[in-house]
Amino acid sequence: MIAWAAVDPAVGEIEHERGDVVVPAASTIKLFVYSAFRKSKLDPGDSAAVAPAGGSGVAVAAKSGELDSVRHEVALLRDADRRLVTAVCSAPPARPDELAAVAARRWRA
Image 1 (cartoon, rainbow, N blue to C red):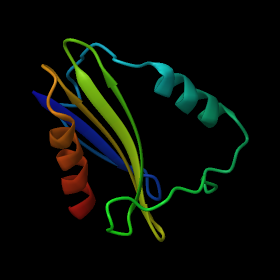
Image 2: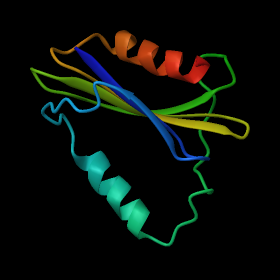
Image 3: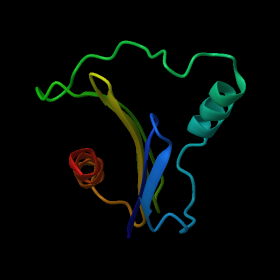
Image 4: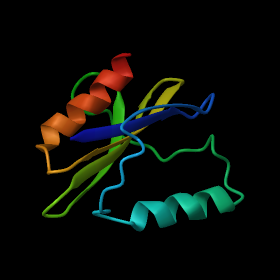
């Protein structure tokens, strides 16, 4: 089972598939970082410089986590003015390239 969610930060539009499925968290640090960011007075328009990856010109900043029963990846994809935040989770753990392919499909959608 692979579940995913994606949000366009510019408009707050959220898409998901199996977003209601609860799986163990392989890493909770992202929740604390996100919560701290949302509670801070930082400008959501500011971002840290990230070098483009994969030769496509799309900058990808990703963080993954893994347990025996689950694997997940959270990523920010950015190209010029377009941004997309994705979260992909699999149980049992899927290969990392399978999770990345889900995020790539959301980018192309």
